[in-house]
Image (cartoon, rainbow, N blue to C red; front, side):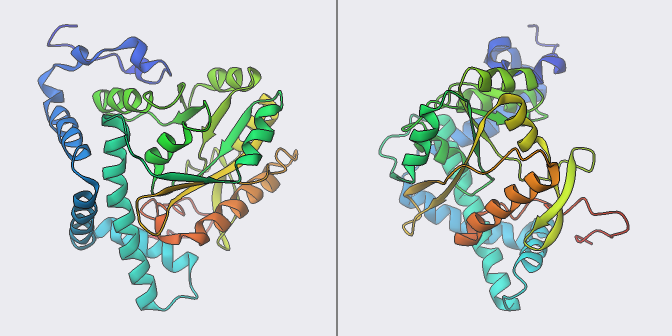
Length: 318
């Protein structure tokens, strides 16, 4: 590819991103700032963990003070979901959320940039995974956007061969870097739009990690309770389980008290699909809420989870 050209955007939506491109396809000057960011991630990935923890604490304080828009989103979410907490407790939980988020940035750098050695992890409920694996059907690992996201994926690779679904990043170089980094510890990366790839994997009896806990708008969603709030919830979980004849196996992840040991928690399969999209969405949110309540500071509250509102309701983020 010549210096004056950039990758075709159409190919970015395909699951086989690393099959289409190589790093040399992104030498155009428009990507130089992204290259600098990638170099930074490679650098921080190699910093000793005790120093990473201290840097994450400092960065969390700065982000909490400077990125007021995300602070507002996180605090609003926490106020809505934990009304029983005092104002001081809600603010303290928001601060902890920023620390979890910044620590997650360092963990993601380690997961994508280096072959993680000495990762501390443990698993709970492994018997649920083993029973599901013994079934001839595929397995949909139902998860969420917890703090230790990609580093938990590295830990999961010690117990299962699995693929992931993901949303393509708008920056083609960063998207390639992200996918290539994740392919170090997963079997395949499947773009969210690639329904044929997803269903084919289930029909082959494969395991797919899937997190449906973000706001994808009204067209793809129904409203179901989440922390007592009517929340736009995608119906794809039940549809995938039905079309792919897959077992829906819940998986949450969190950092233990040392903030270093990654814990994977498998639970018994959910009764999905039920044939009722709203009932399935309710089951997903019910399980997700219960898992979040165990470690509320380690959830991605910085996302506008309640952006889409039922007809007639105003935005909660004003």
